[in-house]
Length: 223
Picture 1 (cartoon, helix red, strand yellow):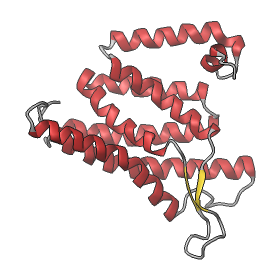
Picture 2: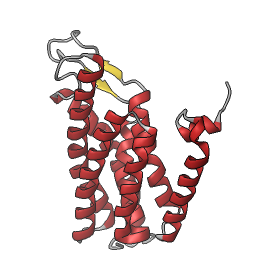
Picture 3: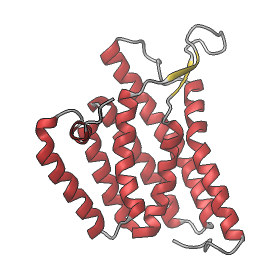
């Protein structure tokens, strides 16, 4: 299987390789200038990648539509759902690395989503990320809880908001593009599965940080 780096960098628009490389270089320079390092770079890369994945990688049916009276619309889960939950955790580490300048990176990452992702999905995901990350940022910034608790609480508050907005956008997109009925994605059981999936990563990271705090390896009150 061939590996076309030009196609990957340009989302299949290889004629835009030069301007895309220039824009990527400016993005990397901006991250460095804003004093972001490894966590910041991962954060900016991960958001467009996830938005791209929701338009390209299909969901798999946990329960097929019509196969159960309890779940008449079925229940689906996207393979990247748990990775999406990790974005909230990574954002917390980025804020520790570079402070409130993380908000600038959030805007840059959402902007890149419109280049790499299907526009309707990018819009839904972009709005969802902006709202949920804002909630996450407010809690992480203004509470005095220990680090491991802040990571868990901020993710717990952000994941439901993100899921609601994204599933609404995905539901609308499928109505527009595929002619599906309303409620194809945004319904209670699907919502619950998505939120649980997103919280798995946050719980794991929070538990690891809590053990490091208890062992004296991490400052529990670090910003």
